[in-house]
Image (cartoon, rainbow, N blue to C red; front, side, top):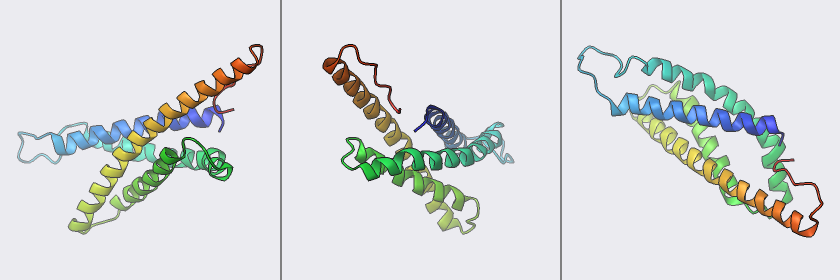
Length: 161
């Protein structure tokens, strides 16, 4: 995985997660005094638009990382961070699919299900992605330390290269 892919994935994941959480809070956690208000907060439509507009670039970058990192890790076998990787992959797929279906579903009962699936898998994705990153950083530090123990004059191992 190239550095720009990694950075793009981190930034887009953070932005989509934050806009999703803020939108959820505005939509379901706030109330308005105006009985004729369509939204609970004046910025609610802007936050929703940001969430929807940031999601396709996240899908694109996730697809690039799928090609350059995920499939390579799956083929290599025995990766120490595999469980969280599979959880990231599965929750991302469910989150993305439910996000697209939210745009077209009109049946009220199905809409409630799609919202629950999207919010649940979105929170799961964000949490597991963070755990995956923490484990990856720890493993990279351990590899770097092992390399330095073997040869103190060796060039440092850079994570992701």
